[in-house]
Length: 78
View 1: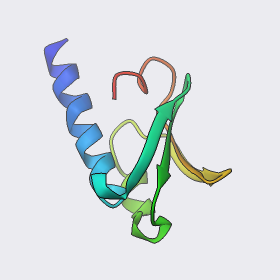
View 2: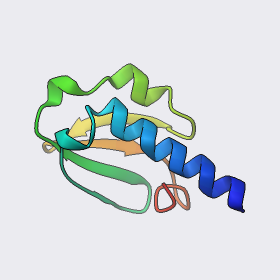
View 3: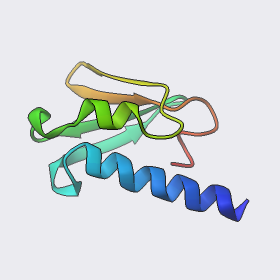
View 4: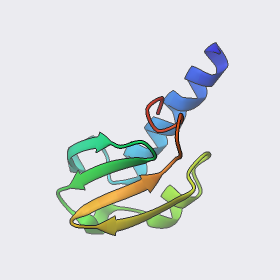
């Protein structure tokens, strides 16, 4: 279980970096399957980098939010 936490922490760091760093994140939340991020500058997001992060099943913009799909039981751990 401890290895899983380390993996998820690393994934979280990679997500932060790929969306332009913590200074580019205005707010974030999650639902059952997705991490929803409001960013200051959409141009700073490296979408290819996000989609290549382990456990990411997809990512897209919707209603001004950048949504990263992880799936049930994973998103809340990341």
